[in-house]
Every structure is written in structure tokens, then in C-alpha cells.
Length: 162
Length: 188
Image 1 (spheres, rainbow over the protein chains, first blue to last red):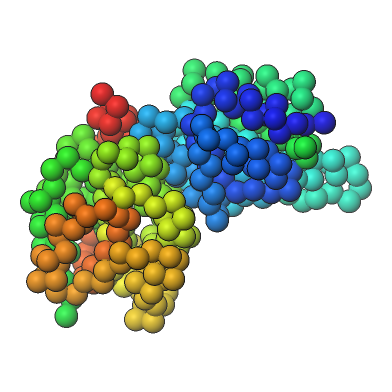
Image 2 (image 1 turned 30 degrees about the vertical axis):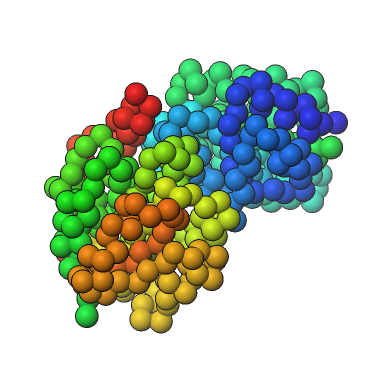
């Protein structure tokens, strides 16, 4: 089980100021939890590439945003990720809903799941896969990695948040 | 009647004080010749069409500082959702100037889709933005100039200019180095 409250608290512990992204079914409850937090601003976008550019501007302005999108949206965001997070050397932590993760062991797979990890490897995004609350330390580690390298890092959220 | 882009940029530069200026594509090199301070940032080698979004992030992060983005019509068409994001998350310190010349200038002036059919002012207003101005004469631009710097936004100004001849902009400093320069200027 993945509790939105556990992920939410992990983001607060890291001092996250803004959450930029687009909700999906996996992270729906997490979005709701974050939107109710007066200390963190949620900035919804209508296409995921926007999220990387807005978050880069927030970083340059001294804030600490996360990008929260689905893996489908990550695929859409290729050039925005490359041009902003990568080329600007932004320590951007992203949380990515891993649609189709459970189909990877099935005969009939969700193609977005099949594309997700190979794409992240090709784009040189270090990532961990979070499937239960006990994995929450992956978020802290992603922040440490991003900050130590001044480059992006990701946590894939593979279970629907509750 | 159409405007001359370079004359418009000169007028902007003459009035500019400590605003952040984010340029891209056809405005990046002409603006660099007019101003190259730590608060000038060319969104070149960056993400296609996202200079205005990057500028919005800065405006949200630094509400005390005016952020002006000089966007192109080709870039704007590639990311029309920016209008919606800006309307739902309005920033008083944000000014977007769209240089509309109807062409992809830096790749050889190919026509942008929908040229002479589309209407950026209608699209911006349709997204929920209120302070939207289409400018086609120098006199109108002169009248609007103070508002672009001083009036609470978000503001969108569409400058109808003649096609130019800018090539692909190149910079000695990498994008990461230019980003660091801006970051240091904003947070020192």
C-alpha cells in the first residue's frame, strides 16, 4: 500500500515549496492531499512539458519544487526535460505515476509501462520504484542525489496512492 | 501596418531597469546586443516553446520582481496551454510579449501554421486572461510601454512585426552557465 499522507510528509520533510504537475489515477489521492496543504502550492498544468519549465523557473528563483506527473506525461515531456532539467542542470526531483507497472509480468502489457524504464535509462534519469510505504526513504534519497549532482532524479510511484 | 522588431526592442531596453528579461529564438541575439546584464536570460539550447513557462516559474518564485518574456509566435503556438496556466495562476509581476511575425524566423522564415487566420488576443482572452493588447503601430506601443513595466499583470502584449532575418542564435556560455548567472543574480 502507498499512503498519500506518507509521501506528502516526505515532501514536507524535504522542504518542498511547490508541486507542479498533472494528476492521474495513481496519484489522485496524493494530489488531493497536497492541494489541502497551505504550506505547499500546487500548480496544475494541462500538458506535462510545462511542468518541467515552470519548475526550472521556480528553482532558479530559489524555490524547491517537485514535478508530479504520470509516465505517459513523462514521454510527452522529452524535450522539456532535456532543455530545462537536463541542460540547465536543475536538481529536479520528479515523482512519476507508473501506469501499467503490474502488467509488466503479464502477457498483455501496457505499452507505456514497457517504454517507461528504457526511456528513463536512455534519458539518464536515476530512479527508484516505490511500491509500499516502507519505500518512502527513496524520496529523501532522490533529493540528496539531485542536490549532490545538480541533476534530476526520480521516484516512480508504482502503486495507486490511498 | 506592421512594426519593426528591432525598434520595439530598443524602446523596451531604453525603459528597462531591474526587470528579468527572458528571450528566445528570434529575440535572443538582438536583445543581447541591447542588454546583457545578469538579469537577461536567453532561453536558447533550452526546451522548445517553454521560455514563457520558465519565466512564469521565476515570476511565481519572485513576486517582488517584474518578469518579462519575449516570446515568438511559433513558440507560443507550440505551447498554447501557457495562456491557461497563466490565467489560473495569475502573477501580477508577469508580462508576456509575443513577437508575431508569422514565420519561423531562425529556420528561414517558413510560415507558421494558421498565419493570418489565428488570433492570439482571442486565444489569450478565451483562456481567461484580461489584460491582452494587440499592437500594430509605434504610437500604440509607446502608449502601452509604461503599463508593460508597471501595471499589475498578468499582461499579454502581441506585437505585429515584419518578418526578420535572424539566424539560429548561438551563445558562448552554455545554458547551464547562463542559468547559474541568473540564479545568482536573483538570490544574492
